[in-house]
Length: 484
Image (cartoon, rainbow, N blue to C red; front, side):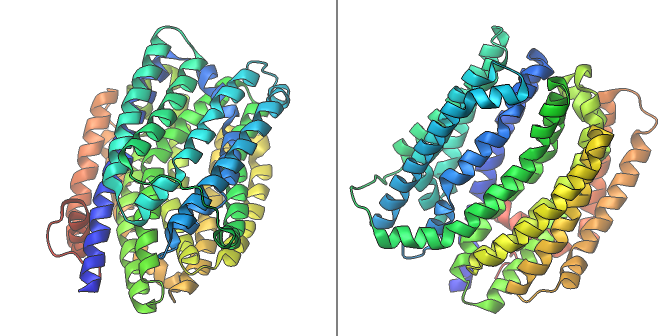
C-alpha cells in the first residue's frame, strides 16, 4: 500500500510538474521567438554577458538550503523560518556585491551600458530569495499544481511586458523588463497562494544542518555554474556581441526540452527517492525505471531537434539567425545526456553523500576546462563540439559515482539506455533522408516531425512497451504503470 501511495503521489507530482515547467517555459519560448524578431543579436548578447554573474550569485544565495529543506522529512516551522532569513540575508549580500562590481563587469566587456543593466537585473535574485521556502515546501509535498498556476501567471504577464517593450523600441531593456516582471509576479503569486509565512524564530541547530548539507552542494553548484557560463563569458569577451547572441539563441533552443525535463526530474524524483532512501532495493528499482524512461524521452527529442535544427531556427526566428541552426545541431548532441547525469547525481544527494557530489563535480570541471581551452582558438562550432565531448565524459563520471549509491554499475546503465539510443539513431537517419529533397522550411519541419513521431511510436511499442505504459501513467494516469 505504501509503495502504491508513493507511486500515485509521484505520478501526480510528475503530471503537475510537467504542466508547470512546460506551460510556463512554452510561454517563455514563444515570447523569445517574438522578441527575437523584434530585437537584434547584440541585445541578446548584452544580457548573455551577465549570465555567469547572475547565476553564480544565485547559486551562492541558495547555498543548498532549498535542497536541504526538501530532504528533511521532519522539517519544522523553525527550520523554514531559519531557511528564509538565511536565504534573504545571503541574497541581499549578493545584490550589494553585484551593485558595486557592476562597473568592473562593464569594463571587462567594454560595454558601459552593462552597469545599469547589472544593477537592475540583479533584483531578480532578491525576488527568488523571497519565494524560496514556499517553493521548497511545495516541492517536498509534491504540490506542483500551485506552482504551475504561479508560473503560468508570471510567464504570461512577463511575456506581455517584454513583447510590448520590444515593439516600442526598448531594445535590450525589453529583455530585462520581461525577466524582472516575471520574477516579481511569480514571487507575489506564490506568497498569495501559499499559507506559509515566516515566524520570528531562528534555530542554530537548523542553521548547522543547512550548513553541513549545503556547503558541498554550494561549492559543486558554483563550480558547475561557473563552468557552464564560461562559454558565454569567453564568447562575449573574445568575440562580438552578435556572436554571443547567436550562441545564446542556439543554447536556449537546445536547452528548452532538456532543462525542463531536468527540472521535472529534480523536483519530482528527488523528493520521491528521499522518501525511500533507507530502502535500498526500492530505491534501486525506482532509479532503473526512471533511467530508462528518461532515456526514451530525452534522447529521441534531442535527436529530432538536431536533425531539424536549420528549419527550426529559420522558421521560428528568421533568416538573420540562420547560423544558430548549425550551432543548435551540435549543442543538441551535448545537452541530451544531461538529464541522465542529473538522475545519477540525485542519488548522491538522496544518500547525503555531498562529499562525493563535490568530488564528482571537481573531476568534471577539470576535464571541462581542458576541453574549453583546447577548442577556444577554433571558433564557435569547435566550442560546441567541445561541449559534446565534455558532457559524454560527465555522464560516465556521474554514472560511476551515482550508480554506486544504488548498486547499479556503469555497464548496467549503458545497457538500459542502448534501446533508446537505437530508436534515436533510426529516427535521425529516417528524418534526414525524408527531408533531404525538400526546400521549403515549413514543409521540412512538418514532414520531419511527422516521420520522427511515427517511427518513435512504432519502435517504442516494439522495443519498450512497458516504458510507453509508464509514460502514459505519469502523464495521463492510464494503464497500470510500473513504478513500485
